[in-house]
Length: 196
Image 1 (cartoon, rainbow, N blue to C red):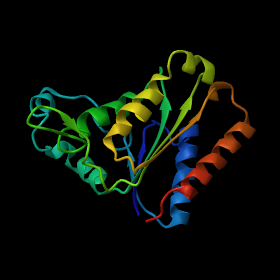
Image 2: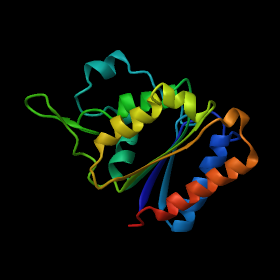
Image 3: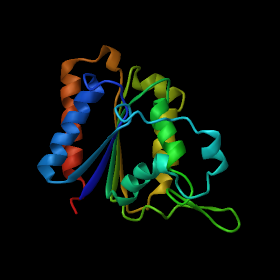
Image 4: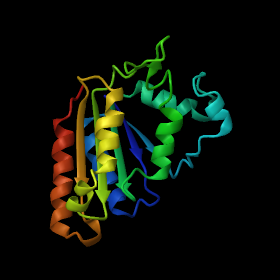
């Protein structure tokens, strides 16, 4: 299975970097064809330019064509990212804004209705994130990052696409045993995903 792994952290020496390494190792054990997109290493420009905006519904231009090809040919999608200020890192939000556009991630009917049927090949979408703060403060404000991914972006995929949200909270004060337990949870989740 071809799996697109999108990594959105400036450092591979971070906790997110360790999570990425664990994800890649588990996918290799499964024998998946891995395509890694490291948005920082790739120097992905998250800003939606005037040209991008004016041609939003047109065919994808050369600046994003490779990213469009990646997601259109992937059968599995894994995101590894930190939650910063209750949301996606700017580079990941910009990736969605620029790449998940009409005729890539959704289409518009003649009546301008949004139709989500362009990812029928996607078997799973796994979002793995870390939070500096605890579960309770994030929950009390409605956990906007989880809502964006689990309720908003998830709509782009078919109901048959398995979705998992794995979050490690309170990493600013976390203990090694909690990180180990989270890594085991990631491992078991990946092992349970569809293989082909």
